[in-house]
Amino acid sequence: MRGHTDRYHYPEIDLNSPDEKNKLSRKKRSLSGKADENKVLVELLEKATNSVRYISRHIKKENFIREVVKDWKFVAQVLDRIFLWVFLTVSILGTILIFTPALRMYLST
Image (cartoon, rainbow, N blue to C red):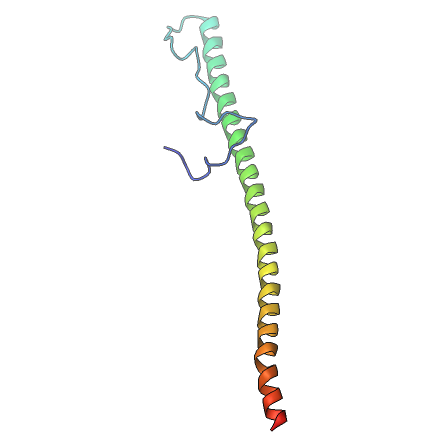
């Protein structure tokens, strides 16, 4: 299932799976001797590395989304300011145009 942050495309990383598939985890081997202990340690370190990579990708993605949201907030602020000035201009001009004929009629009588 896709989350709410998946609609943003982050081109540098692939975020389809949380961790990479580990080839060594497919094969179950019996522990016998020092070499097998080293293999277990290597598998453990690879899992830890994959977890760190996942966290790193997640943080990069969050930072990217935060930047996009910040950009859109700035755009919204600029548009809000433009619409404020348009509204004020139209309101003031409308008020002047409405009261000018009424004032002329009042002063002429």
